[in-house]
Figure 1 (spheres, rainbow, N blue to C red):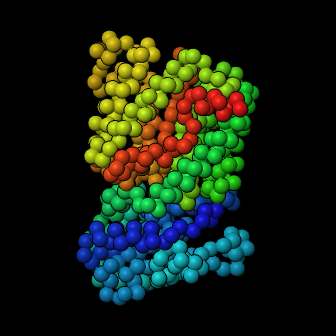
Figure 2 (figure 1 turned 180 degrees about the horizontal axis):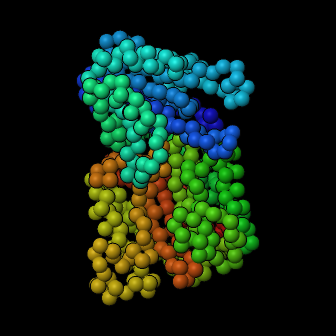
Figure 3 (figure 1 turned 45 degrees about the vertical axis):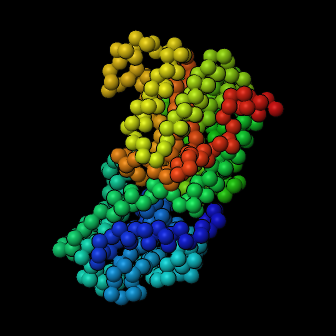
Length: 429
């Protein structure tokens, strides 16, 4: 792994928290993600199942975690199954975990090779009443491709039809949004790497550079600092491209007088940063660009204050909408008449700010969390207002990552330049 080994107390505590939620006499089983073909003889880079990583720290394909706290055989209360290496794998794929390394990473004492899984499971499953199995229940995921978890569920239901099968995802959705000190530290490190990349970009950008050249500067800084890479496909959107919310072509020239909206974040140890900045290509905002920019910054600063424990998702966005409405009226993009006559289901501000202002952040960029669960201390949330004006040929979005605590919010990106004049100063230094 590029990243430094994580203190395995994180995973030991995570497993303890999960098993405390299981019903008595329950087995919980978590599978690694599939390996997906990229071409005739090559797979896409492997990305671990976030729940398996959360519970074990194991970052390798074809891995299985089995938890059975009430198992009558103490050897199988907590078991990790790994792919056994061989001479062929060593030559063609390189390093795989040894049992000793897996123990050090996960804090799990009982490590077996994958070939032992079926026999061990069969020897203990009849002493369990409940079997907790995992699927992807992220609200943003639409299931269309059968994956390892689904296939495994079908297999177990066929072999053990009288067991009571339960969903593990609701338990993970309860646990994962509350970040531990180690998780906060890892996320902060991803944010710090993202800062370094942004500072590099500020010194690089000038009229005539291509969007993909900006992207190249970012990934250079990420890899140099031991990040795995991008947490998500980066958006480098110059000019009117900024009005395409998920623009990722990154293939156009950055022209004098335009703005560049850049949405990117480093992934470090499977934890992610998520940042957006908008900068002037020539190092100087026009009067109108700065007006819009400062309006977005105002919404960001005010809406950060609304992120407090107990706040409900929908209520938060309604309040953010009111703040944004005031700014759009000031910019003469909408009128007070528009607001008075607006459809409550589609407020007037939505014409220029059509996406949400926050999401949970963690092992997944859009992390697993309950949409109807109030914000809580320990949450890491993005704050990302934007104003998009196709008729004027530019858009502005700003985004920071915010940790909620009992004593107030902590902006994990507070040290990343965001004031317009500071950005201009760095670009023209």
